[in-house]
Length: 304
Image (cartoon, rainbow, N blue to C red; front, side, top):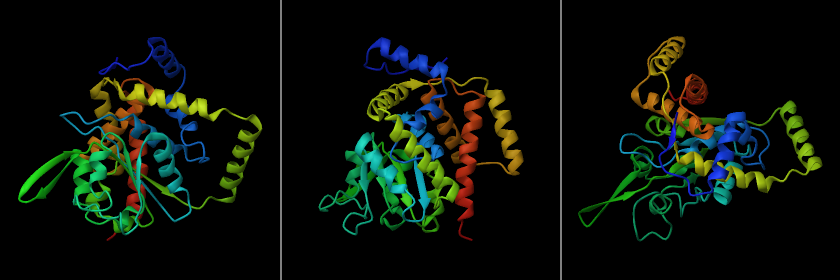
C-alpha cells in the first residue's frame, strides 16, 4: 500500500477521517462535485483539476506536475475555472493584455514576464488566451523541467519554477505541436445544448432550495488536496498494467512515445493521490480514458 512520503502537519484523527472517506467513496467523483461550485457541470474537467492540484513538486527522477489546457469559443466558461484557481488555490492569472502577454525573461519589465514562474513555483499558473503569448520557449522549459534560464551579461542564471500550467485558448491550432504535447489533459468547451442548459438550471435550483454549505465543503477539499500531495502511491501488478496499456494501444493501432506514456502515469498517479490509493488497473484505465479524450480534442483541431 502507498504511504505518506511527507507527514501531513495536521491532526492524526483528521487524517484518519479523510482516509476513511476515501475507503467508502471514489474521491475523484465525490470531490469533483465540490470543486469550482460556481460552474455547474463538466465533472470531467473538475476531475482533471483535482489530479492537477494533487500533484506535488517534481522528483529527481520524473515530472510529477500535471498541466491542463482548456479549449473552446469565448463565453463557454473556461475563465470561470481560471478565476476559481486564482481566488481559491493561490494561482497566478495572466491574460493576453499586450503589457503582460510576453514571457520574456527581463528583470526590467513592468509586468512580471517570466518572473511569474519563479514567484509562483509550487502553485498553479493560469494563462488565458495562451495562443497570444509571446516568447514561449521559457514556458516550454518550465512545463517540462520545472526550471528556466535567463542570460544576463553573458551569465546564465537558473531559476526553479515548479508550476502547474493551466492554459486557456480560443484557437488551439495556433499552438505548436511541441507546446500541445506538454499538456497532459486537454478539454474542449462548447456552447451547451438545450438539454445541457436545462440540467444546469435544475442543479442551480436544487442548490438554491437545499441551501448547501459550500464553504465547509471547499475547506474540506483543500485539506484533502493537501493530504493528497503528501501521498505517494505504490504500483500494483505492473505486468497487468502493461497488458492493459498494450490492449489500449492495439485498439488505436499504434504505439505511443515516452512522453505520452509518462503523461499516462502522471494522470494515474494523480487519480491514486486523490483516492489515497495505489496505482492499480482501475486508475490506469481511467487515466487512459482521460488521455484518449484529450488526444481526440487535439487531433480534431490538428493542422495538416
